[in-house]
Length: 155
Image 1 (tube, rainbow, N blue to C red):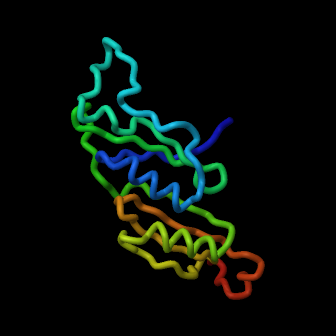
Image 2 (cartoon, rainbow, N blue to C red):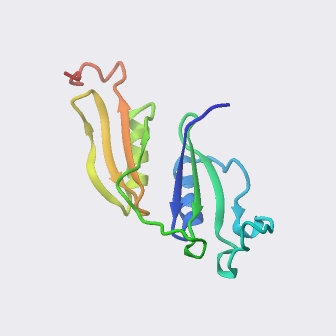
């Protein structure tokens, strides 16, 4: 089955971040959390440092529709240099303004709002922000039949 997902790297806080996302989306992990201690010994890959063995190697969580959010800790001992950036946004397209408001309220708590949730010129109820973990999100709720009379169409 083909699908699109978003993969996130965190500096040693993947489990905390995904527990938060799980509470927001009210879904369950697709499989048990894989840890670096689960990686089988191999001559091509040195064993995980003792301090890294309990870190998350892989986690997957369904969000909305068929979208799956995946993640890993990115330990420096394995050559990772995890930095937050502005090059990735996760775009959520909920079915209702109520769900858009709930997602915005919960995901933006403790984060930084760029564009507050509002009606936009293209006819959607939209917001953009970074959550408290530095992950960038957009909410783009398309106008419903009831909203069309108040939405300004895209030029």
